[in-house]
Length: 367
Image (cartoon, rainbow, N blue to C red; front, side, top):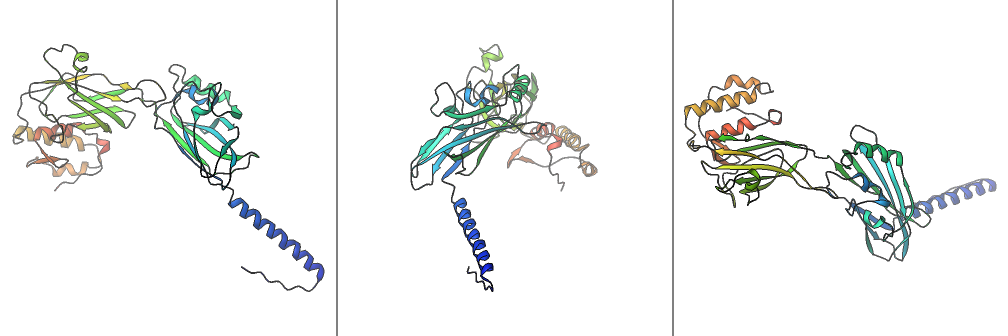
């Protein structure tokens, strides 16, 4: 763009010249600012569902577990010397965010195009690979979360954010900002729901249900062998089924690769695991429950009695929900049923209807 001015007085011209000079200087300064990113910075964090309070003291962390991993890549044409800055900000459930730690490393050298990966472990210990030039820690805030976690040492539920930047030796920013978050839920228990402990079921395809405050679990099912006398004996063998599940329920598959069908008259034991997801420590396991598959035929699905039970199960499921208005259209269930594209018997349908959570129904259509 070209700027053209016409003036009448010399004095005014001098004033305009000074103004233009100032604009030119500002323009160059803005251009310099736009080119300041000499480092591309990215961060990754593990998907922990629990961490320990002691791990949050970056300089004196008591674990070798990685809380964050930062990748620094030089975009400069020549060798540069930069420092990594880190802030740890915590947002506990129902509370405002607060900063618990802030640190700046001593200068690091990056060659043109070089990438360097740094974790929190590299900054910790008596003689770490990367030393800290400055470090501040909010002892008051640390004591608050420490008191909450006094019994277990685990940090309370909330979001733990790690915010990173790179600066030059004069502490001028030379990179983009990067942030990673660990969401801590602290799973504390798993409650089994179905099949009931010690109960009898009449289907070869049982509906398993449990309650836990995490999404991902591992379901294990074991068949009781004649020489096994305790639940611990049973679950020490080879699992009949071991399946990673997202959510709070699982229907035993009627078919699929490697599926072993349950057998009539046999007893099975089952439990749910929350795998370890922390810098240290074990995962969490539910109680061990058992059930026995009775000798009732579960494949015909034509029994009037079973149809009646299935109808009552559907009515009970819809009662008290937004779909209550459909109840007048339900007289009896007949025909064939399918689940996930596979045909199932009437008893299988009953087990599914009885195991469903009303609050999770998203649509009901009656044709």
